[in-house]
Length: 302
Image (tube, rainbow, N blue to C red; front, side):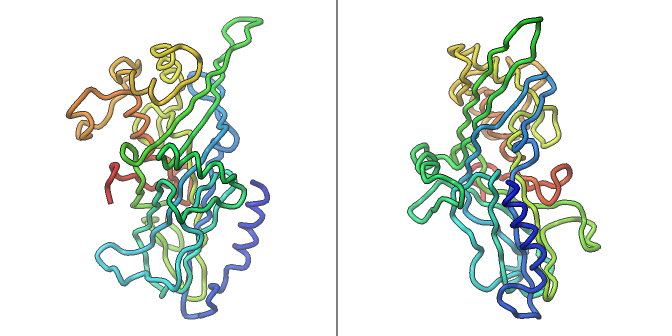
């Protein structure tokens, strides 16, 4: 992680002129990393120590544009790197060069399962690409959650939490990216391209948001429902998506709810697994880890 940050700083320092050397044009560079909690772990509101052991994403590309104006924000070449499997804790850089100076308010992120053109990013073992492909998934998140000590001399047994997210059930497209206002632009939407400059934008994947108690990026972190799902299942202290899907959301204490307009709730009762998949929509943070966000579209949405 330190090596990646050093690289990012070096790129930032050398980012005055886009790579195509056309001074009348500008560019944008996205530095895709992990949130601080995803890297360092966190303590939940119910006092579990939460550590992320494995975070793997199937990344397709960032998108830059202006809805309703397809020729605006067009760029020379393509965004590199595209179509890669990566661990955001190691970082990934994608750059779009040769853009006419203009406001590009509509920025997005696209994930997806690996295909024949997908490559593992630097620092990511090829086995992770195979794992995503075999499970037809675009994200694998694994964590260890250690309960609090309840009595003197107790050695709490940790839970292993194994989460898999498939495009058919979970968001792959994120849009409306916005963060704090920059360069005098108060709404913080997208990017603003300036002649002869490169806008360097941080994008963070926040695995901890899968443990929020409300369908936003700002709820409390809670692990107890995952432990409850395991007890409701085979009680082996390994929490799987199947166990989350078998736990009715109405059985989870704490007023866990999905929005009433969610189509998945019209044909059957919602499960805790449905809730966690919905939280995936709030895992991409834009420019700022506290106030920036790209919102995931419904599964299959464009």
